[in-house]
Image (cartoon, rainbow, N blue to C red; front, side, top):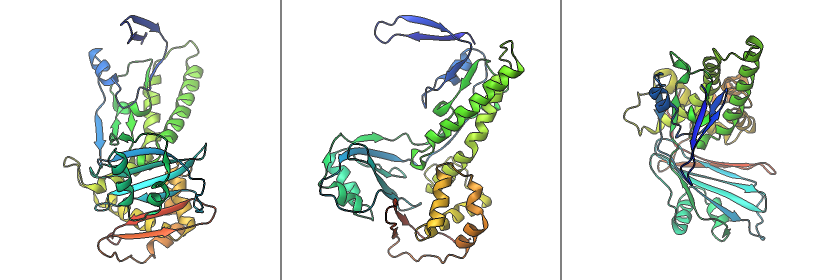
Length: 330
């Protein structure tokens, strides 16, 4: 690896920048697989799992007369039938960040009227009630590239030394799970460890083995978030090319469905889930004895008219509003 070649968008001038190490953090549209092929190196295989999510976001000014006590509301969709959800959280400058989203191709509109109608269609009306008379500060931004995609650089038979592939160029996760930035931070820490280890092992600056070491360690960082995101997204059954979930996966999915229901009324379970979602604790912590007991002994909820909405409120804490549909028993 000798560096990179850039082309100016303004005058098409080509510039070569020499570099000992190049990190590709160019995102979902990374061209590294094509570049590797053109240089005679193997390109990574790719795994993709999608629930066909779509997101629409708008920033609002919080009304001066707003009196409610909640800090945030998160309305969750539930596979396979309840496709719509939303989240509203405060921002600096007395503003709300509002995102509505739909799964399985139920994309939210980008017009002002359509955005509000989508919010009003949710099973919990508080987000709609909060924004219907609030002043919008931006247009509606849309995002529909939320598929999970993993490029298996850790499986390459030969590496281009001096090239490290990082971030969404390797893994791209459905943003609904809120893990992308955390995974990136953990991956950066692994890169730092690999660079320090390489410097210790090869004080002369030899890069042999660095790319392989980093891509394999990165794969171990990605594994947990990937399993969580794809395990949930597979439940939407929108991709005919995806192999049906095996029995252990279905067991985990059913367990997680029951855990979500218990979290509606149990603060400890809710906290345990958020710690895992934000990658503060490993997924195995959701199976510790006190959590496991509460989940397994929970009575099934009976849905009316194929849907059920439950809301828990905790004063001075974030509020969780979750929509659930019936799940098979474990």
